[in-house]
Image 1 (cartoon, rainbow, N blue to C red):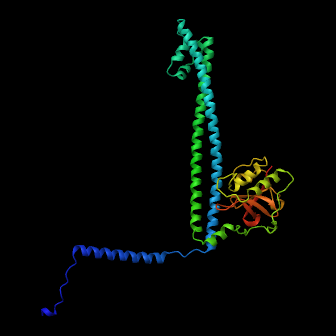
Image 2: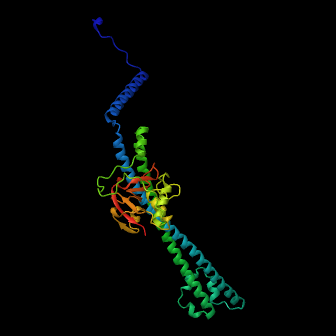
Image 3: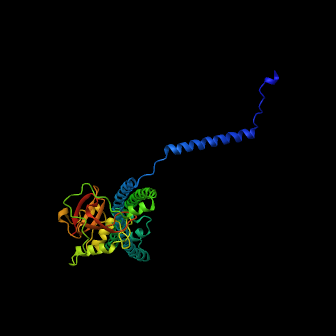
Length: 353
């Protein structure tokens, strides 16, 4: 009967059991990972899908860039105002110190003459402002003392008010700087996402995308000037518009950099601002403020030098040069270039004064 018994198997030793269990666990995990990767792997996006998504990300990044430009402009104004207040505070403080010195000289004279009057009490006071606040002080002081004390009081008030204004301006500046940082983070996130998508294209596909003009807007008016005509040369009449167009022609080929206003690189509103600045005309910094600078014009009234705006949020601008063409700074990774005005959704146009 013993011969029919199943041989008894030796149990695995502790080390062998642990090794076997670990091996099985790793194999199972690898298998699960393999299946998971297979089941969840996304198919490679087509070039048209990448282009559509990258275009969307660039449009959103440009909207954030214009918000960044607006916040930076306000922050620059706040910083200039703060600098002015600090400089004015320093001048008033010097005047206060001069007035105090004069009053101290008078007090010293009174002390040497044996008369410790109100002037020296003021000069020796731990808190001159509190001392000056005593309503009866001026009437009790002599005429000479009263004039000096009034000057000190006025200077103290002026310095105090300026310091309060500077503190408020500093808080405003810090708020604007926080706003700048927030917009910058959005821009960089959008651009990083676009870069990751573009990396999925082949070198040939990416080169084609970078060279491509944005697709024509479905809403483009059939009455728009034709974009098949060759770009006209810059006007030579010496007008301000002609000088702005000539500047834009000279910027062709320079890189797009968000937040840049030249001379080596530009974003879209930075280019138009710099072009008109070269003609002696000051434009605001952002697309949504430039559209209201000057006189609004319709598409059939466009003339060289006009600003042409695109997208519903007025987030892109170019400089019209004639024959249905504009010069603009289109997007990160590109350069200032020619493009037809009917290549993007139309938002409006304006003619700087």
